Structures are given as C-alpha cells and as structure tokens.
Amino acid sequence: MNISELKKTANQVRKDIVTATFYAKAGHPGGSLSSAEIFTYLYSEEMNIGPAKTDDPDRDRFVLSKGHTCPGLYGIMAELGYFDREELKTFRHVGARLQGHPSMRNLPGIDMSTGSLGQGISCAVGMALAAKITGKTYRVYTLLGDGEIEEGQVWEAAMFAGAKKLDNLCVIVDNNNLQIDGPIDEVNSPYPIDKKFEAFNFHVINVADGHDFAQLAAAFAEARTIKGQPTAIICKTIKGKGVSFMENNAGWHGKAPNAEEYKIAMADLERIGEAL
Image (cartoon, rainbow, N blue to C red; front, side, top):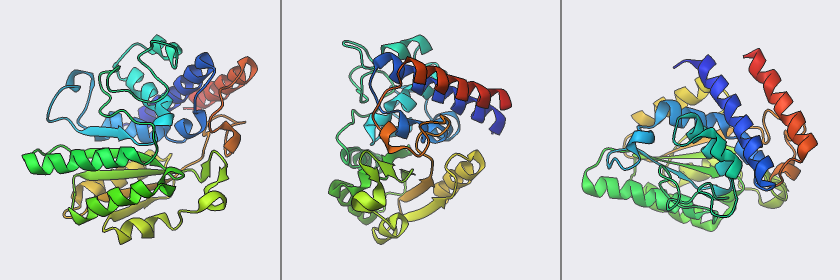
C-alpha cells in the first residue's frame, strides 16, 4: 500500500466530484467528498474488482447504499479506467450513463441500482447470503450514510445479517454527523451507532479518522479476520472534506457549486495536491 499515491488519488476523486456536480448543476457533493478515502481504499486496495472483472462471478460486490453520493463512486471508477474522466461532465444529463444515482443498467461495474435510502444494505445482505448458499468466497461491501441509518429497513437488514452470521458482509458507515436538515443528533439521532450494530450481532470497528488510509487499512484487515459475524466499520469523517466552504456545512449536502464556487473549490484541491 502506497499511502502517498492513495492520498493523491483521493484528492483527484474530490476534483472529479466537484467537476461532475458543477457540470450537472446538481448533485450531492458534501457526502461524496467525505467518502473519498473510503471509495479510494475500497477500489484501489481492498476489493477484488476492476474494469476487466465487471462480469466475473467471483468478484467482490459493492453496493452504494447512500446512492446520492455516486459522484465519489464515479470519480474512483474514472481514475481506475472504468470510463474516461471526460464522461464525468455528462453527470445527470439526459441519456447519460452517469445518472444521479447509480444504475446497473447503464454502467458496467455498478452491482446494484440504489437511491432509496435504506434499501442498498438489504440488497448487499442478499448478495452475501447468495454467496454462502452457492459456496462462493466473494465478499460484499456496502457504504451507508449516518443519516441513512435512521431508516428502519437498515435495521431489518442488520438483524437478518447478524442472525445468518454473514461474515462475508462488511457494512461501512460514513459518519460525517450531517444530513440534509442538519446534525444527525438533532434531526433524529442514531447514536450510539456502534452499540446498535453490536446489538444485531455485528463485529464493530470504530475508525477515528475515516480520511486516514492507515486506519482504514487496519480496519479492513481486521474485518477479514472475523468469522461468524458480519462487520460494521464506523468511520468518523468531515462532510465536504477538502473544500474550504463546504466542510462541515449541511447546506452543501445537495447543492452544486456555481462558476465562482467551482473555481475556489478546485483551487483548494490544487493546493492540497501540491502539498502531497
């Protein structure tokens, strides 16, 4: 693992997020930016996956349960060669492959169409159960938002995963503490997140800094050692990470930058890139 290269990739993914939402004049940059390191680590280091494996029955599966943050997913996919980076400028355009929520019908490499919050984890649980039934060794990863886990369906899925001892399932929660209406603990607090997953028979790993690749690497390595339980990795992150005026600002949950804001955001990320 080359942490320096991973940092550079994550920073480029952030540029891709800002670019895609700017050209779309719509989208969800805040929670996409907070997940950049998670997307980067999963696709670059953790998962058995790649542009040449989109139909491989033995590949690992990824479900973006918080589907609105697909600009981050599209960003890492572009960086790894699933499609040309220029296509990011077609995000959310009519007829484009890069829709505002991931569509498995449109884009090779998307394992599940998502968008309705709470449903993605249920699909991931089904995939993990299918692997157990068919004797496959692939692992299933799903990324949820901390606001998303206010949905009851999340806990129905967690109950089932724990009961069936799906140790090939890894649930990641992007805990940036903000949802569209404000701080999650003020809107409808899901805390303590770790204790809730433990109650559903998950092995829980708390990552103090979800932007630290060493901490992410340790967490995913630990998850692979767990037998007889699914794993939940709770990552503390910063919404809007990397863009000065977006950081910890709930207003950037679902709003695209205008031309001036785009210029500032890209300058912020250029400075970060130069420091790397």
